[in-house]
Length: 82
Image (cartoon, one colour):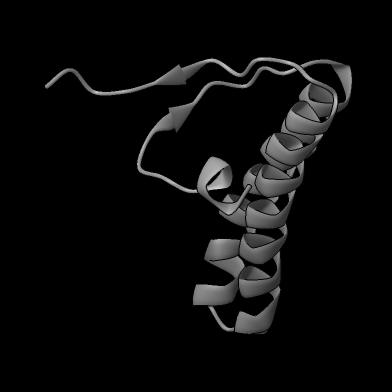
């Protein structure tokens, strides 16, 4: 399964309802991460806030892919032509 979750491919947001909801949560998390970046740069927030949001985004991505796998849904994966 670890091979399934890794790779240099682009995974389109797909894979069923649970996976889609997790991808939406990830998008919201990424938006928060971008908005917090300027606050962190000015010193108004700790760098751990941005780090946490980044790790949370990674986690949500992985869980979304795992949910798609467990539910038996096919993901849409883009692979660069060779």
